[in-house]
View 1 (cartoon, rainbow, N blue to C red):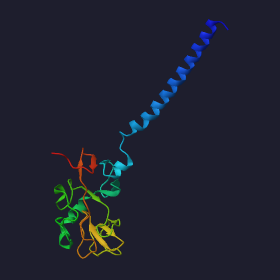
View 2: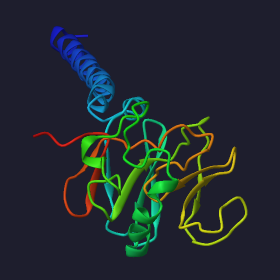
View 3: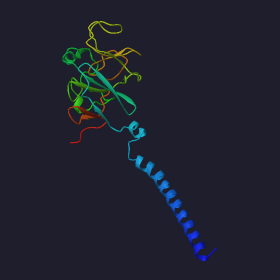
Length: 202
């Protein structure tokens, strides 16, 4: 084999080695980059830890409720009817804490009102009974029903131990639940978008 032929063989071998090394290095860099880029996305752990949840409420009709998850809890968004709102005033004498003054589950200042919300039409509350952590069921139809009083105006019933709440999440007197349903921090980003888990900054 001549010296020139031997040199060409070495050059081809070196070129092959360089191409292979670069390809492997590029693949390794890509493998490292994928987890790095993914760290910019909110993880399920971050969401469970309390990352805010943005909700489109444009499709909720009066009398309907939607449920989203925040911090591993169900958050109810109820669009109340005019009749449901009107009933809130008529039952205040039957409630244990009509003005949301108790502090075990502090109510944000913007929800310390009869309807316990920023906008009267919408209730935003954590759907967990303050007694033993069960999730109450919807009982929006007024009138006598099993486990409910004859003058029932609509609200929620915790079937576990019989606690009842009005459509503002306020607990009735002489029930096992000691407090009103929790109102989570929230605000309206727009007319149709709600952010649960964060309060609006001044």
